[in-house]
Length: 381
Image 1: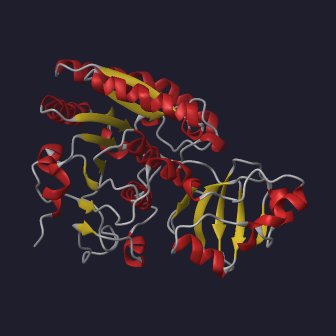
Image 2: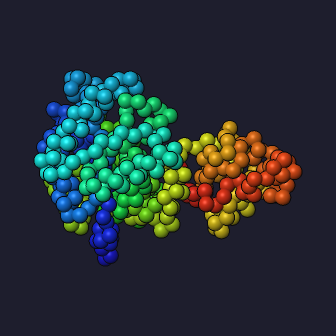
Image 3: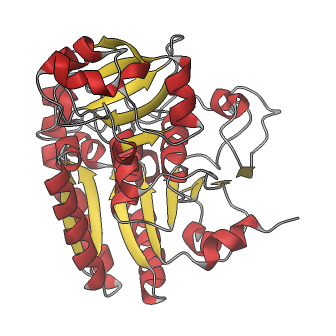
């Protein structure tokens, strides 16, 4: 049997590690023993020459504990206030633990808008690159104290998937409260079996993931599967593993069969197209005919006005828009060269007719293939 794990680990130098709230928290708030154990392992990996970037949850849970709040927080102001209280303690705990192991840390708090703006995205990438060159451990969390729905990542699984692309990680390890992905919910069925390797995201794999979350976290297994799908689309393998297991990181890097390994997809997106597909929020939809569908999916062509049937939404030049067929299936996502109003006027026309209708012809393509990410999976709505 092919040793997929050994193949994955052979060239892994930059590792993105995400730790969920259910791993970090205990009955007394933050579980300091678990944090110390994970920090020791991450420090050992850093000493061995790996570049480590950590995406961590736990700020809200830490803040709730400090305030002795036991019930779930419902309003955004409550969650933001708890995060403001808990984030400082969370970083203080990490900082002290890493320092005991001879490493400095750097705190980075982000909102979605930091990554959707191309210049800020590049600035973040350069900052993270410099920190890794300095052998410092970047610790990243969502800036919960200022984030609102329009600029929230949704959960730290999604944030981690985006950061994996930013740092061009060789491996994404998602530490959670379960042993990995089961073929059905193990809390419901005693016959549930752990899936060791996922080669592709079939309907069965999608169905196996549930939305259930712990009281401390926001992302269930479904969220983790979506994150795995995103990173494997760019060629990054992902391992979902039990974060509270002793020496979990050490054993993973030794090639032991722990958790569920998700192998990279055969057809991979480059970093820019991944950014378009999975980071930018969609502003509208273009409905295309069968000819355009074939040109995009099979021939790698740009989207021309002749293949457009309809336009939905109100968007401007440069906005991210999805392309869908007449059944509503999303096929691709790209940056448009025309506004929605202009596309409505030129849909179905030949390129040579654009200037006659609009009075200008700055582009022949509605979406150029260089700005078009072809994927039929998991596009961010």
